Image (cartoon, rainbow, N blue to C red; front, side, top):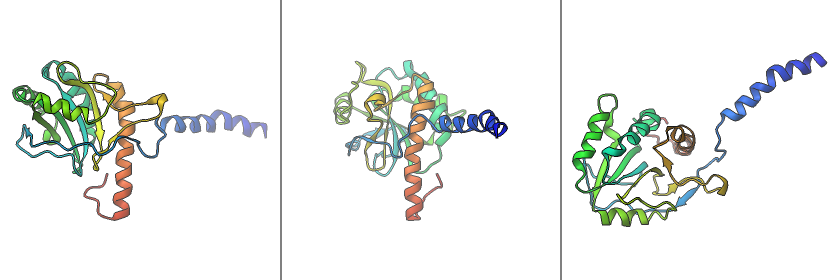
Length: 213
């Protein structure tokens, strides 16, 4: 009997503990809504000429500000940690809202990513500074845009245009900082998996999946 207890403590218990901690820090079964029903984009131009909308898409949304190239490392972090892992899903898009006049800088970011990434789901959208500020204010977030109308954070918006995140005061999170790769690999990846799981479950239930998630 004692031998069995020792074997359990030595071999079984560590495995159980590992599986528990490896399951992720976010224990939510659904990701809470931070801001419901955010506005869609206006009639704004995109770098590739496509009309970009938040409707019926899972969107990772960023705000570049006027100094896009100074923060190019943030886009590479997001590209490596999240984009390349999930690019290819038809209902997913990455959108960066940029001030009008920064088109050439945005193109340089795309050109830098394209040698090792399929950039078809990277979308840079351009609007006036006033429209960007008005749109951001409508997200009702605690953080403010900086003086360049940018932020290193990106936000998850679901197909119904709800901005999602963590509402628990102990781990409140409305956005994910692309300056820190570890935050993308941990908190954002955890939460992103929850969003995809939600839609995978819904698609299986309705039997109308466009692609297996």
